[in-house]
Amino acid sequence: MSLPSGDELKARWKQQMGSAKVTWGKLTDDELLQSEGHAEKLSGLIEERYAVNRDEAKRQVEHFLKEANARLKM
Image (tube, rainbow, N blue to C red):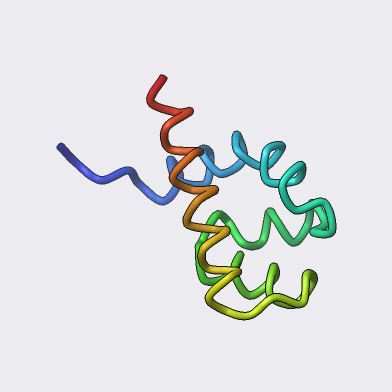
């Protein structure tokens, strides 16, 4: 099994942006696009906008990405 390419990951992230926008409505479309689904970038944005600590932001992102992967496998 091969890992998805960078282009595939970007395409998958664009598919999930609507769900991300619902989950984190304070983030702009541009911010979500720029994060490209990278957990660290997304965590940093959530930490800033929602005034949560790093661990909480990381937990939220991990949960979201896990759910997103499950939706893609359906």
